[in-house]
Image (cartoon, rainbow, N blue to C red):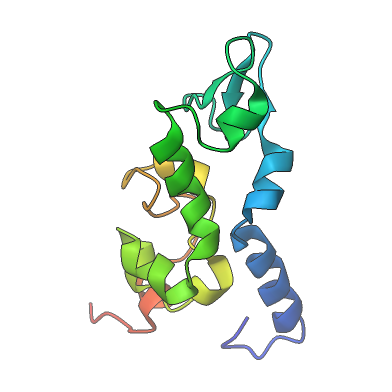
Length: 142
């Protein structure tokens, strides 16, 4: 769209930015999942990350990082929203680490990245549709 000077380019940027927005701690609280067993997860997609259980500990304590087994994980997840774009991109591994569109995508969907090829909280989102030339702006010679 950029190369074609497409009239909807700004709208496309807006949609791409929306998907890459990093939630704040307040946003994250509204996305937290408490499953039928009382297990607290960061959101409905990260069900393999257990922050605590409301049947054994009040949610407020879990959410305030007072569960020793999950406090570090919760801190790491929350740090995404407190770091600047430059700091976040510096921590990224894989294609997102050098992508010129990081300011728009923010590295994509963190949960999907955690399960992707590069894995972990700071991995690249495997759902990215850009190839290397599009990410870097450098055309590769064939």
